[in-house]
Length: 161
Image (cartoon, rainbow, N blue to C red):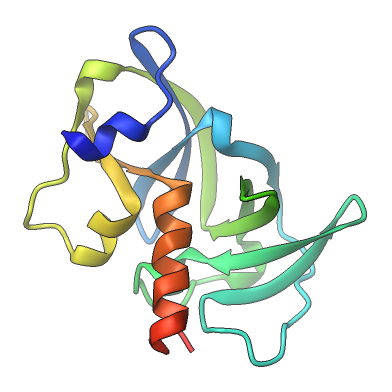
């Protein structure tokens, strides 16, 4: 469970902002989330990699919008105009993650976090800190640092272009 250690744990619990993407439930630690926004007008960025949907203006600050469907190879959004934005920070820059829906903040016992099985896609394993088994489904935890590292290495290799 070495990947799970990097998740911020408060006491014996994890607090995760939940979201849906392509029918899969994801969570990001609340400490990483700066804003949750409804659908936004996204300005295209010429010559950006495929994962960059564009940019938005968030209270006077330019925020890069990343399409998680592209990053995780989930195909086109069924209704792209209804995508929600989860704003995170990485190295003093803000990024909005496009997701299908944003749910509630979920508090789970830290002990319930397990490493991802090796059968999961390598792309998902590269951005996740582990998985939590819920009553009806699995919740994959997203790690902003791992997500950004994956995007940077993909862009340098020309994969995401």
